[in-house]
Image (cartoon, rainbow, N blue to C red; front, side, top):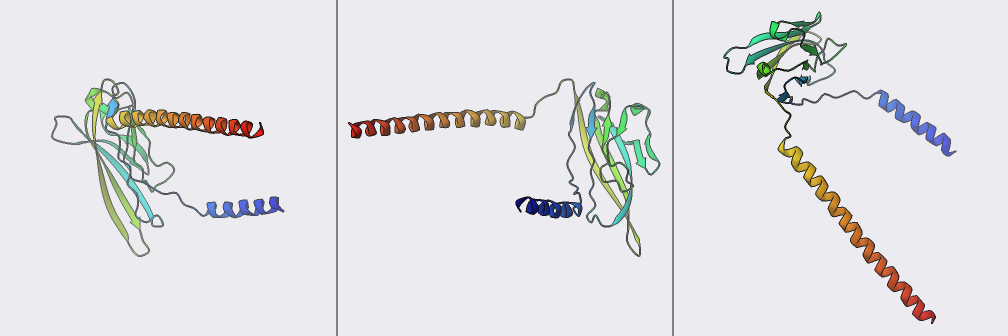
Length: 199
């Protein structure tokens, strides 16, 4: 009987999971890359209503450090990716939404980052939302300020969280040791009391 209930419960859970839809969360990109390594430039723009059909194309622009103007470096649309700048030729890979014309993640991956890649990156989502009686054109832009360093550095939050982790582990172990000693003494005292009563 318990097996039958378990199987019925599992079947019902499977039905509910089938009806679930994924969610989208807009997360800011990292901003510090290490020279000679790869780096993901994140650019996410979630639709407000997932049931609305949409199509999007993406354009990435780059402004080198110290320059005034942006230039087009990369595009992605229904025809696929196109590297628009010789500076990034064979060094950019699409790392965003795949197998969908409704792009919400337009992240790209820079290969073999150089110090010349420091600067400001801007991605534009050109999204067309299709409603029953009309289409709405929406343009969203995200900015990433990238700095390239020779060696990876750890952030202050990372260091503080690691220190706090070790402090809490040591504190909990000391508390456990004190509790063990306290319990051992209490058990030993109770055993001695029992021996006295028996004598």
